[in-house]
Image (cartoon, rainbow, N blue to C red; front, side):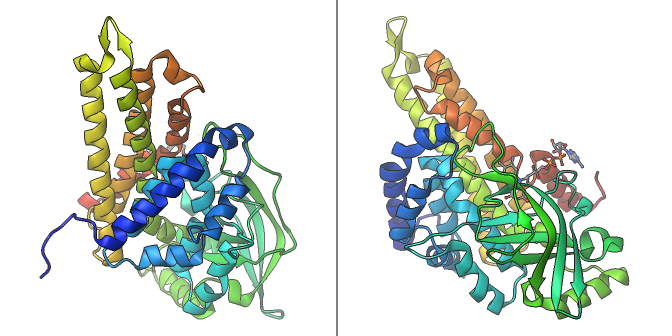
Length: 404
Ligand SMILES: Cc1cc2nc3c(=O)[nH]c(=O)nc-3n(C[C@H](O)[C@H](O)[C@H](O)COP(=O)(O)OP(=O)(O)OC[C@H]3O[C@@H](n4cnc5c(N)ncnc54)[C@H](O)[C@@H]3O)c2cc1C
């Protein structure tokens, strides 16, 4: 039996320092500009692709870490740089995770590289699960997928909401209903290949934060995709649907399977933003003077900073635990994935708000980055399952009861 250690190995330290360097030198200086422009930061994505930081191979290497910490470590550093730009870089990973969660090996080999494009020509991917009438309520999706035997094609019709990279992606991964009678268990995931007719988007939605990341609705109007675009293949789907019809426990719902694997990573995003705001506030408090002394010399400010640091460290430990469990196939028995995302998301909102308070009026202005960090942080209690939904997952897991 191996012993317990939280000491990062050499590979993890090298990765952290490398990503930190990119976050500090490339992402940070561009943060304010892309937040104001509310556009996808293509030059940053291209630079990340050139050095191998954005791409299929880097993600695969981070995933391959047997301890499971490489992905959260790299993610925290990117989001420490800037959350909006980092989400533009990491949004593709959610779609890739959707393919990983349900796809066959040959589907991974075909589609994951298409998600990222190449070093010289990077591309984006979108994971389209949420719909205007159903975000948390994944059983309420209405987008339909109907199989056309004659052409061996699936025909998709419906509307997806708030998809990161929706409409500007090379590959869209879409969750759709195959058998409406089975609710959430009658759904499947599909890859919509580049340039498929019938997929359109009305354009970017204006947002409170994460403004460098593209969020948009996606319309699917008689979108025909080849049979091989059904993630997991027909045989597995038919077997799963048959089990569901017989009332047996079928394998998980397609979108939920993706979210389970990505929650600790989303937690790491939130930790990165919180740490950035805390570090900024700490330096400010050591420098700013009021009433003839540094503001940090007041306990109320110093204790806030102490609590901020403690909460960030606690959140990171939950993220690392869930990431380690996920990578090592240790089952989540108490909603540990949800705990990590819930805690980190709420810490991020709280810490960024306190950071504004520590800076006072300066914190409320766009002269300092903490107001942007606060706007960015709020999404972490909403997407990939709201805080309420995480509490549902945890309370159901610990009680075994039906809690609504
Ligand atoms: C910037 C951004 C990016 C996004 N990216 C993506 C993406 O890439 N792909 C994608 O598929 N989706 C994406 N989403 C959508 C996101 O996942 C949903 O907004 C989220 O899941 C919440 O769904 P909803 O907005 O429909 O809220 P609702 O489900 O309508 O919830 C509204 C409120 O009711 C609460 N609530 C609902 N049900 C319960 C319950 N049973 N118990 C207690 N409280 C409850 C919720 O917690 C919330 O507070 C994104 C959203 C945003 C804003």
